[in-house]
View 1 (tube, rainbow, N blue to C red):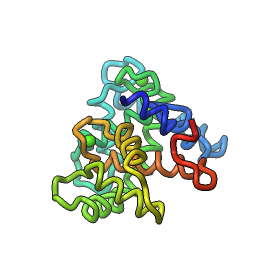
View 2 (spheres, protein in one colour):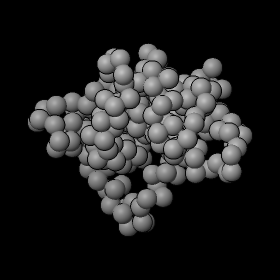
View 3 (cartoon, rainbow, N blue to C red):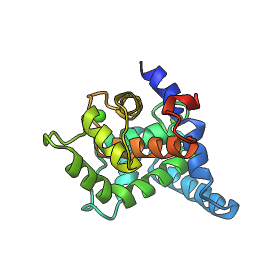
View 4 (cartoon, rainbow, N blue to C red):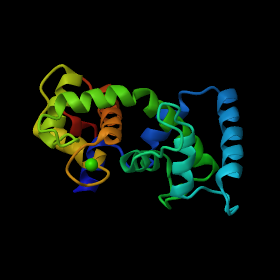
Length: 198
Ligand SMILES: [Ca+2]
Ligand SMILES: [Ca+2]
């Protein structure tokens, strides 16, 4: 089911869609600087010298780089899952020098958007569960589109973006859902439905 949904949205863990989205934002010089920074950060946080960061080490690094939360705060579980989904290209739950560059960009972009995402959760989460149900996600996507979104379209986004699999879209998962929706929208033509891009 999840694989079918991922095929339908064109988004998979560490997929080309994610990578292109991130790398296209930078000039060659900026990418070189980012790589240097990633190497330096791995040296700093990789306590056992494995050459990559564990989830715990990554969480510490991301927490330290988030000036919007109190010192010592760590990312939430859905935030870590989101960053790993975007950056951990080989799915080994560790982040190497290349993957860390995606993680840093993902995190920076997410932090900038976090307050707005939270406001969207509060606006569309009518039952106060803290995350959007599929129907609430459909309302959110309709708002983004400025038109009707079908149940099937919402379900396809939900199945890919609900990283925790609890049937609700939490704040960081909403960042992923929004990126998926944006990329689908930019590839759509005319009135064709989402799955026509397959
Ligand atoms: Ca990895
Ligand atoms: Ca979820």
